[in-house]
Image (cartoon, rainbow, N blue to C red; front, side):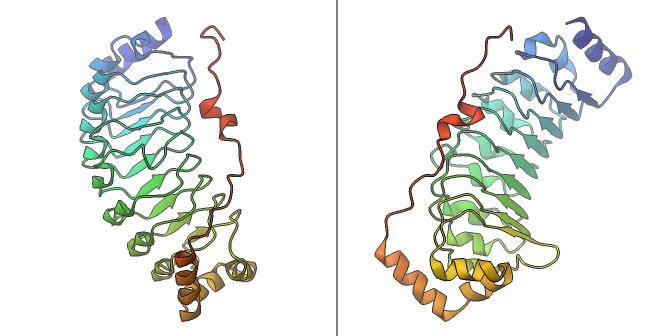
Length: 276
């Protein structure tokens, strides 16, 4: 406790703008007296702790540009979080979130949002989630999405999208309208076909990333993957593929079974005793 208090006092006296409180076993922000009084700080890192919740008072840190809460036990977020109008980077990866609070999409400057390794699904997103039009990077890997909202078309500044290791049985054709997209990670899902509209994007150049392995692709797509990603994009742009895709969608086949037992995810394991 005394060490944490000293860090806060030093930050106050020296007007330190960046505070790192990672890996200190913190279970509650009340254990860090005076932290919410440091209105001048711009960077706060509290990764690798044992926080179960974020208090509404976090909104008092009005000048925060970066908030890193990676690898905690957080299952609840306050609505005040999205009122932090200077926040550009928010890392909530590896927590226990199963829903996001109402109004979460109210951030005005957020550029990078990491929600990887949580328990989120298409039902977890508030109605204004896709209002965060400043987003350039969105990490949603290792969650529970089976489908993804077509409203993603609103994120026209998006450059990196990770949907790796979910339960996706389809991806929205609207991703093909995100013309600034440079990286797309969809590996480890239940995808069998790609929307032809994805061919609108150029994701196979030297400065781009397209990863889609560990999916049960239909045979014609799997054959193209064996030749390389550029062959895949050439194929899905063809009239032959558009015809095949149309037939596949019309047939409405049963989606592939889920492969992994999500109950084994770290985000779902019982918490250890507070004394451990």
